[in-house]
Amino acid sequence: MPKTISTAELRRDFELELINETADMSRLTAVSDINRPGLALAGFFTYHPAERVQVMGRTEMTFFEGMGEAQQRERAEQLCSYEQTPCLILARGMEVSPSLLDAAVKYRVPILRTELSTTKLTGRLQSYLDKKLAKETLLHGVLVDVYGIGILITGASGIGKSETALELVKRGHRLVADDAVEIRNIADTQLEGTSPEMLRHLIEIRGLGVLNVMTLFGAGAIRTHKDLELVIKLTMWEDNVAYDRLGLDEETIKILDVDVPLLTLPVRPGRNLAVILEVAAMNQRLKRMGYNAARDLSEKMLKTMNPESFLD
Image 1 (cartoon, rainbow, N blue to C red):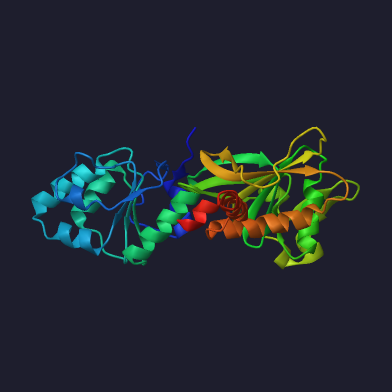
Image 2: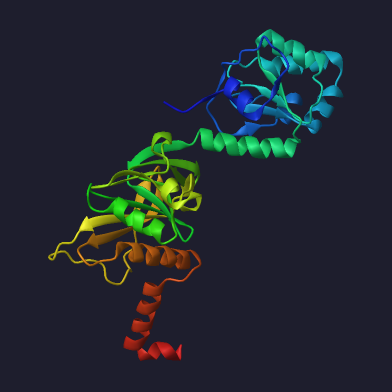
């Protein structure tokens, strides 16, 4: 089932004024895009996206009020006749044209009003809808913010995910979520992780129980949300497995149709996982800036084996 937002919820969150009290506030919004109905007011309804929230600014209202009364009523009737239209929002605290109000009352389309400018309204509304209607999933793991890189630590239960996160917090990094991580696709290639409300700020350490990270280490030790940029999978060390030693084989994992870089770290006594994750975060930042140490080494080795390449 797709996620939806009711017009009543939208009105509450944006503190909007309802003009027509008899409107149907249970109408639902299921798409994150918004629409400014300039073409519709001009009479072009062929591809009118009626399922979107309709925003009218000074441009649309000035154009609409410049029409004759009969034409105003005709366009208002067409604009408000769609049952799937969630609402119509007026920016800048503008007055509602009587013909538009009559059509909205007739079809019970909510007309909402705000003092925000059209630009600010559309920007905030787009961001709000993107987050509220984003695809989401719940993953088992620990999400931490290390040097500004959001790292999701995954692996089997008891392998040391939470202990590694606790050590990272002690070293000055921040915890986002432990055990359960809510992942949302807030943009085409952007994933955001957060903690379920019930588990926020909490971490479970076997032998100690549940700890409140914010109470123990302060507000600077936690984050409410963080973009996910790297997944590190912890596995038990196996002597007969050939692990990647250069880092040339770049793996990814698909989460909500987004490919995220994946590193597999074998765990055995004596390995300082917290330090390794810090280095992984710094290396990821370098890759983001265009430098890849493994690729650079490989190119140097190829040149060494082929001296003629220096003559090119």
